[in-house]
Amino acid sequence: MVPRTARRPWLAFLMVIPLLLSALVLHAGAPAPVLKANDLRGKAFALDSLKGKVVLLDFWASWCGPCRKSFPFIDSLQSRYGAMGFQAVGVSLDEELSAVTAFLERTPVKFTVLSDTTGRSAETYGVVAMPTSFLIDQEGNIVARFEGGEHLKAEEEAVVALLQKRGAPGADLRVASGLQATGSLKAWQRGHLADPIMSLDGDRLTSMFREHIHASKEGASGNGGAAGGGCGCN
Image 1 (spheres, rainbow, N blue to C red):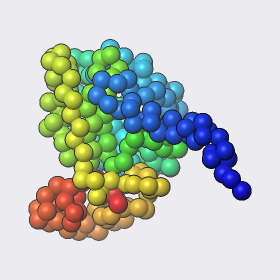
Image 2 (image 1 turned 30 degrees about the horizontal axis):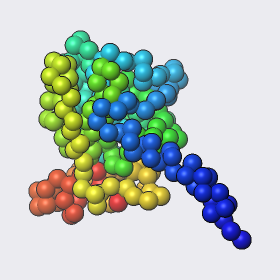
Image 3 (image 1 turned 90 degrees about the vertical axis):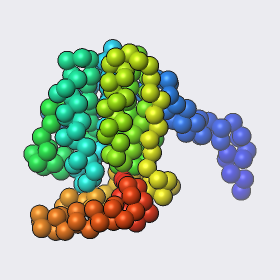
């Protein structure tokens, strides 16, 4: 039997259009994709409501070790630059809202936090590492992408540049390709982690031991090295 797509070439073309668009839309200067989700109180939120502000859109998950370090930093950006027209927005990709709540009890923040239990927004933005942040300018265009929670200084410099209207930074700071989720594996899917440091589950002693091992590997191989680090994704 001849596959339907072989009998109808135009059908095969239509099937790849969403993939092509998702790749194109993330180029510097292109409009940020539509994002609508609820905050943790169930209130609807739309990204385009922030047009006119510099936005740092951060995709994260409660089990993500680097997120535990980047979250306080993003919160500090909100405190220092909020009055200048900056807004941070975190999008949790956890399947259970209770996990998000528990994370925020340990790491409270003042910026907007949304919940997307389906992961569709991350797919739209082409997220392949945890965490991943997108910097969006006042016109609603993506101007920078930061993966793995390793580029905090560069993130702040890019935010300041936009707030001072010194032009788009055009940064594309990625983790090593070997640490990115590929194929059917999604970066935010729990249980598919290359390094146990990424999981915050379990008792504190175990967590401290994992952090020690992780730090040793980082020192030996550098951030994002093959021995460990970066986003920790397969």
